[in-house]
Length: 103
Image 1 (cartoon, one colour):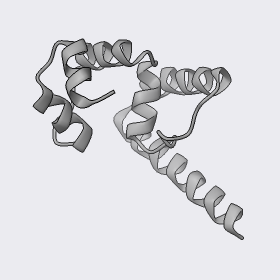
Image 2 (cartoon, rainbow, N blue to C red; image 1 turned 30 degrees about the vertical axis):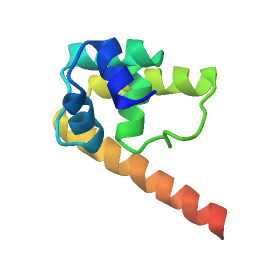
Image 3 (cartoon, rainbow, N blue to C red; image 1 turned 180 degrees about the vertical axis):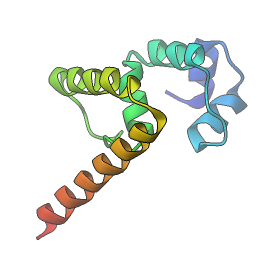
């Protein structure tokens, strides 16, 4: 799906899609939900891909999406400080896994 097609389907301006994709704009929750619905994907999958928790090029199965949704629900209940720590921990685990797979 092109940015133009996504923008048209989600009823937003194409330049906003570009700014969101490049990280120059953060979408509101309502807009994120519209984008997720348009893309037929859970909001949690978009969030996880944006945070680098999953590779947005790899296909995810239903269990992975369920796990991501569960993680997001728990994550939302954390304080801002604990959210930062959690993200850093997950990023560290991903780096370690990558190092183990190349060793």
